[in-house]
Length: 72
Image (cartoon, rainbow, N blue to C red; front, side, top):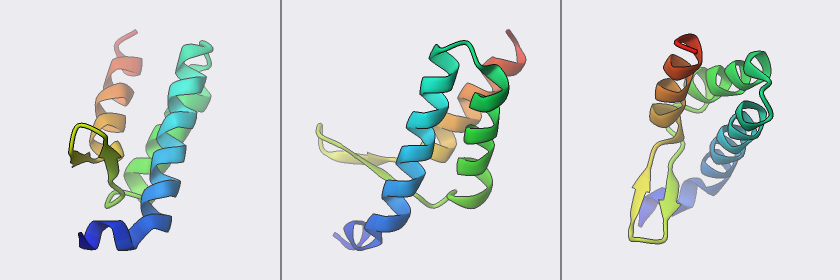
């Protein structure tokens, strides 16, 4: 599939999302928010392969996580 040809974009977007999750889990809200915002603003088109057989967009989930941080 063509999406796989954008591996660098996808890998960086996914890595930044994971970084945001790590910060969030460590209780570092500011750093988590920065990582999520970077995914949203700079890697919006990144996609991550799910072994169940589909792609998902880290930027969309990062937006949800960012909203959750604002509500905590």
